[in-house]
Length: 338
Image (cartoon, rainbow, N blue to C red):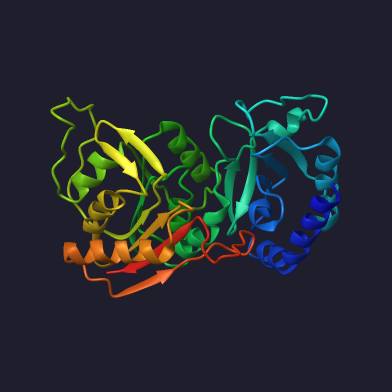
């Protein structure tokens, strides 16, 4: 497809300076082609260390297009990469649906190590989740955490595989707590810690968000219409110097509903209360349909109603490997200095 080849080459050319900067800072995980914004909606091409991950979300790629992508990327980077192609336009994206089109080498599907900000991360091109264990658009936010954690107590909420916690530890935090509901996510977080043995140990709490954060914020834990609540870890109320809040778009449990579109406040309020006076709360919203200006106003209004004065509010934008023609990328990140 000449149009795809042309769009990919333009994207790689536009990233030439970025590649140089990323390699200098110790990063080999980044987006090579962001199809939605660069001419091929539903197609992404990412590098994760030694691995090249191509994913199609709307329709399968043709074999010649896939081979052309690999050739262009390897020529640009000057090295071969291990290819994994996930066709996610249909039900099961975790298999090679058409061996005639592509069949991944066993070596490409093994666990690998990618680097970001000089740190080692476990990456896995195909697994039960939706990405190779590291969300690339959050790289600038993780870098901010690494540069602003020295001497601080850090709480990483919806920690996933604990990349934010790892950056906090690398940045000199005196305490890092990663909280996530999924034991599998935290297991990868522990593995990430082990891949960086020079860093101080992090702490891990497996818990639903709502009972954990409400205990830390010294708020009551309520149930739905008298429903008996599952067991949960008991925590003492306390505040942290730096809190990072990066919730999924939607999730539901016996304790509450995560809904970034309709009820961000229920997530934000206890996180604000768990942030110390003079501390910092970094919060994220990854819904494309939410405008930054509207969400920022909502966040600041929630803080004001709680009596938590925001001294300064910064925006952390994704790096240029996630271009946004309208200036409103799906991932929005605010830094609230309280």
